[in-house]
Image (cartoon, rainbow, N blue to C red; front, top):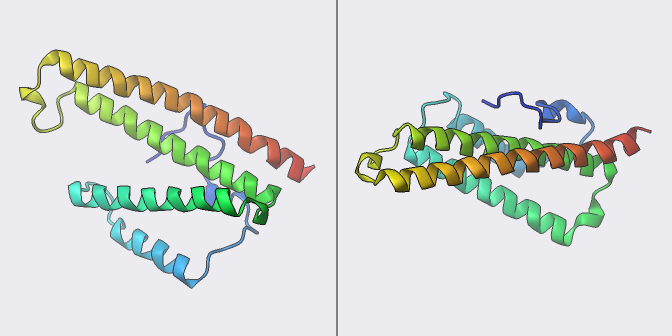
Length: 154
């Protein structure tokens, strides 16, 4: 669950723009399958984590393609919604990285006990830095989201 933080623009992306273009039947089917897969919520194991990562990678790949080849199909309202969603995605990634850092530091992952302390500390430090930088990125996405939204509203 996403924790409220300074870098969040709004936790309710789905209600952000009620008139947003909705996906067709294929998009709804994929979304419903994902909801069913994760309906019972945590805890999830490695297979579910891999499935979620695969879906996330496919989704951001699709966004990259859309912004590379079809940016002109989107207007300022859709841009604001996209930036809001990216802010939330980045916030989730940031908080996930920070949780991983905490779990590495606490030795929660199997096999860490056999890893030298200096290596565990280096991994923890790297993840902690990534988490801090992720907050900065999410903050910039928050600012970016608010700019087209203010223009579209005005």
